[in-house]
Length: 162
Image (cartoon, rainbow, N blue to C red; front, side, top):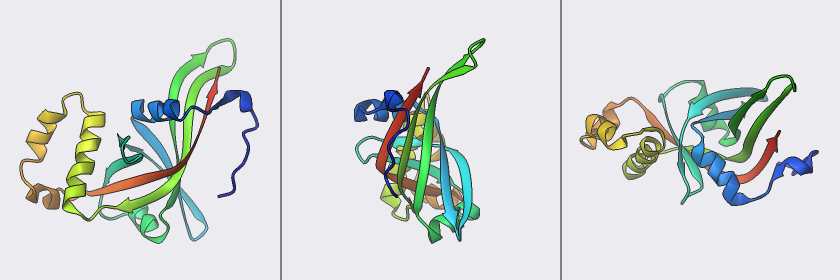
């Protein structure tokens, strides 16, 4: 994608560590996809893997999202840190990260386990309890009726307001 300059450069977040902190602290990401010149957007929860600079998701094996990913793995997504509306000022505080990357469906059992572990550690207050309940043995990954997806983030920009 062609790189554009930010119109309000005074609001740009340039520190890559700060961009990663916003992603690390978020819980939801809005992902945009396109197939046959038709846009689609979906909001998902995720697990952030700082080491791979990737997000992991769980999803159903079938559906529009999976069909689009198989046709076109290029996605654009955003994570927003909501700092709240400012009454009487018609303004809203926020910090956001927009990133571009490739989405893939994970087939390898070891990476499925790794990705789900990242996801649970990111979202759950007590991830070990959930892991004990849901993931007692490898065969559970096949029985779960869920796919594991990975979004490899290739480019990031950030912006903050009021």
